[in-house]
Image (cartoon, rainbow, N blue to C red; front, side):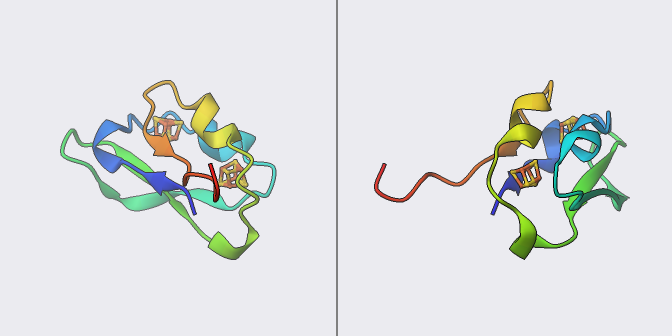
Length: 69
Ligand code: SF4
Ligand code: SF4
């Protein structure tokens, strides 16, 4: 599953908008800078496509390392 580093998020929402599985939504908690950050609503549906990570302007999303890589 992806990892969202809340502290880097600025609440732009790009990851939410571009996730093809629509499993990201803005959470209700704020990070230390006062920005809401996204949460994964249904981790089982994540296809590890990496679109959320590549769309994030603040590199706040990490993908898990691929097995065997
Ligand atoms: S890796 Fe792909 S499917 Fe998973 S949360 Fe990110 S954009 Fe959505
Ligand atoms: S794209 Fe990055 S900065 Fe924007 S809401 Fe998603 S995690 Fe936060």
